Length: 327
Image (cartoon, rainbow, N blue to C red; front, side, top):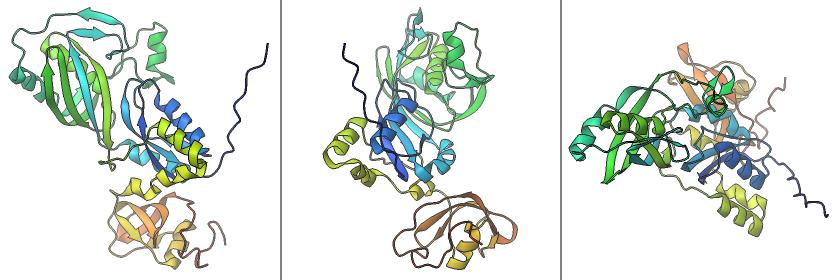
């Protein structure tokens, strides 16, 4: 018997930036991340919040130094389009679970009835996450405990639903548009909607449309990435990466001169007149140095330093800045 052919291991390389991946159905966020990472042969990679295997759509992936701002993107507002089936509840609150119950739909189901229920699911609401979720309890994801047959109860928590609109209604199927804050489960919205109607419900499809600050994303599929890499080489994929600073566009920008930038990179406080208090993106010219925190009296300190290559023509390229950590 011939031995299986082993795929060559990629030669990992530095790659810095944000990829707007169009995640396919059937893959977990981490599986999609690892496939993209291998295509880019990127030394470091991370994603910015999980999408269920059922879900498709925008999954921002961070490569290299961009992984240092992934946490900043986790709390972003997100938008989804979801299809909900009424009258059927499942173990996972989506189409991948086993059917728990089948109930009749309300006899008077119409747009007015649906709107009256949707109103109560908007704004700051209390939501119980699905037991089949990645939330951890005593160090283990809830879905692991649920698959073991353990009794699992996810604690309720407050979430923000900024918009929840009915886009279409055909029989037992609803299409809804959702804009929500971090930690919101659209599966739980479907469950709560069904219970308030008295018939139960579950999620059948889910697509993430955008994530702040990427509200009009140009997304790339794994298949398209593989085709481009095969035809043009791995480095051709780098043209598809957004610069790291694109993920910080919602933050105030503070620009330093070469001397102040040198001090900032060495971890010293810098006084910046007129800088807004709070977290800021710190630049010298077009070179992103990192995240800073502005405190009393305009004193700027390092919150998260970045080691991005200096752009051509930047102060570093002209020899004005010392390497980080030099005396």
